[in-house]
Image (cartoon, rainbow, N blue to C red; front, side, top):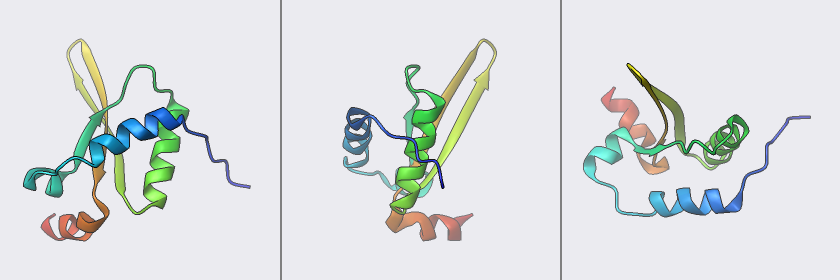
Length: 89
């Protein structure tokens, strides 16, 4: 049996609101970056990755480390542009 974490529906609504806004040409190529909120658990992040990947999105978990600061992001590439992005790399 595969473990599938459950997601807070409010979290999904928040992410979907961001993904439903207009995408710039840069975002179409590089994805929309959503900063991971401190309240999100590793299980939340895993569940997001599973849910959106299953729906065709290319989603990665990114970390930016600078002196004294660590920031986490999720990068979402729109399903219609996953192949286009792959051709550009």
